[in-house]
Image 1 (cartoon, one colour):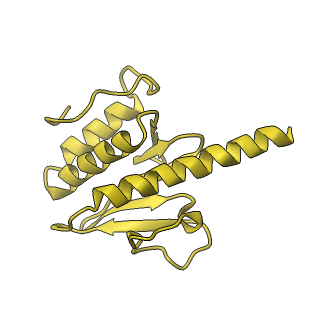
Image 2 (cartoon, one colour):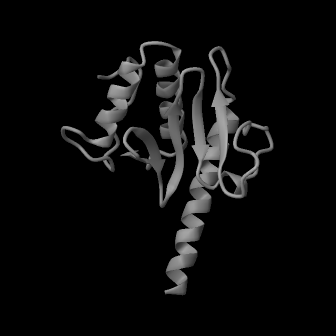
Length: 145
């Protein structure tokens, strides 16, 4: 189920019934309130920030965006849509987007509530920084081998 204005699946995504992209499409469709609209918007921002992003469906129902490792997840709860960045503690956040899971040494999250505005420019920069961190760690690992 596609919402108006959403891009088609990237060539790097699995196709066919039950593909991760189809699961995410279905989740967006199931959430017939602001959470579905917000998840679709977040997905679009991620795809704009990284056209090579790969969508996954993990842990029995969590949308995950990857590029040489996990960038972030898109969890939906009753009162919040949560973007959890797998290596968020290692990312600079000059705009102060991170507002949740701040006490850990690895992850950081952005809780988005109904009516919240998204700073798209800052979010795209954060996504690109997460991708750069993933690709740099992969390159460093390859050099060690």
